[in-house]
Length: 178
Image (cartoon, rainbow, N blue to C red; front, side):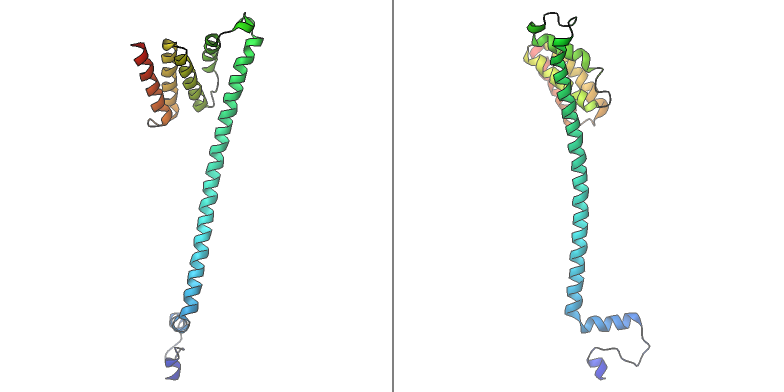
């Protein structure tokens, strides 16, 4: 009876793991609750750390992809300006090349560039369309916007901001043309 009152196992029945565990838990409720809470906190911390590590990996990949795009665009733009000095056939006036001539040359080249990076090519089409629009070259702005939309649709989901932006650019150019 004393063992029962002290919540210790009683010898009147065969020992079982569940019986002994139940008696132990009743005797040590505070310690068991603290251990359970501590275990839960540790597991939650490990899970949160694993989730954050996964998010960090995703963000690293996104940053690397964006850096690659930025480098490709920078190289393309620098190459555009350097070609003025090197390509005497394309730019016979050298020091007197206009922005329109430079854009025309870039627009011709962009179709064959960035074959492995369709997002970059779409961004370049966006930039060319916008620059043509700013120079009031609406037919060329519309042509680049069409190519931009086509390339964006081929490589991105239909609701992607690039696709929507290309549609808006086309509408803007058409509004100026009419």
